[in-house]
Amino acid sequence: MSVSPMIVVGTTPDYVERISKKRPTGSVLFILDQRHLNSYLLSGLDRSILIFTDLEQYDETLDSLKKHLSVGHMSDPRFACFDCESLIMASRLANYFKSPFPPTEAIIITRSKFLSREVWRKAGLDNPRAVLASGIDETIRYFYLFKRDIVLKPISGSGSELVFRCVDEKGVRESVSIMEEQLEKRKSNPLFKPLRDPFTSITMDPCERWVVEEYVSGPEFSCDFILHKDNIHIVREAGKIRADDQTFGSVMAYTMPAVYPESFRREDLSRVFSLAAKSLGYEWGHFMVDFIIRKDKAIILEMTPRPSGDSIPDLLEAATGRDILAEYMDFMAGRFDASLVPQTPTRPYASINFFIPASGVITRLDVSDVMNQSGTVALFLKKNVGDRVTLPPDDYDNRLLGHCIMHWDYGWEQVAACSRIQGLLKVSVNNIQTGAGIETVRSESQIKDIFYNK
Image 1: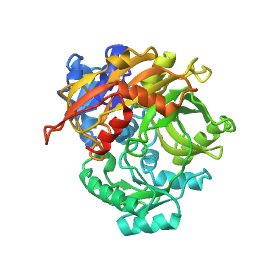
Image 2 (image 1 turned 90 degrees about the vertical axis):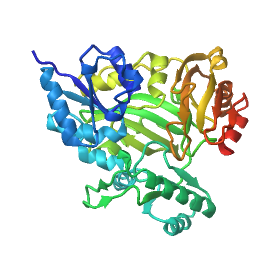
Image 3 (image 1 turned 90 degrees about the horizontal axis):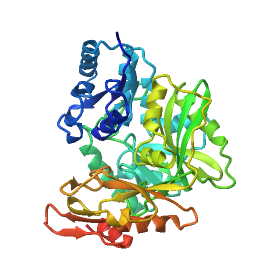
């Protein structure tokens, strides 16, 4: 008798471990990049649920999956994806098996931070001005043309990777210099591979040009929503607290429930999300969206057809008991009840990120003071003693030590409260090149000094 498995395409070992603990054995198969073959997180798992392949090679990946399904007498697979760099592969595989998944062309448009802006602008959504540039001279010309602060960002990339706010010409020159150097290093990264513009068929190389856009200020928020039968269902909302002592765009913390400006109409989100998704070419799907509220209007920063990551799944589960990853997989498997109202937090919670203070090898990591706080709900570590860590601009993900979930109070000064919790974590890093040791203390200002004067 054949079964219909859920195929998770291109995730990471920690997600494999997390999901496999909660799903029936054999109900989920994972297609993983070959670099994860010897991950210790996978050592205790049934290897029959793991398929290792080169995720940049479609034919090889498809053949491996077909053989695996044949051996297991499986048919009619459904597909899920949690990582932006694997969405195109997941879409192509789903298309081969005639399984529901967001269309490849829409994903390509979404992946481009310039094309998606252009689509939204033409659809009538509020958007900052944005242009493509290459080289210092052209970028500086746009800086003076816009007559305001600008943001530089890659055509494609994840989160705040290589995103810079420039307030003067000196900042533009410094940011472009870093951008040019770092883009050259990312040519083999799947997220920075050349993209074909579906509208013009012209190939855009994210390592040769970048986006210049107007800087937009305002409180930031994040949502998950589902587009189903022409209706929008918002299934998760959170506020963002910026990490101003980190690289631009970094998140210090997420808070739930989201607290919008008093004059903002929450019901407007459904209209904006619907128009944004449909204009990109989607008719169905589960989406993550980040946005700013400016003058009571939602301005979308990023949208992608997958559930939220970072600390949000842990925050939502701690605050409500809900598993957003399981909900997403159920939706992709065709199990979605539009009549159910998602449970929301009954009291405020926050997930606070911990950042490494310097590049090197971790020699000490003491979380006892964080755990001893009365409001601490849970702590999740991504790093441990002996791990090597790298700072931006070389690596933006590797700097995260982990995050803690806290009971929260919106009456507190939000940044100061986060900084106090961050300062409770003690970490020592040994610089690989100099052998010098760097240790954090309780004062967040000293952590900031270490970050900028490494």
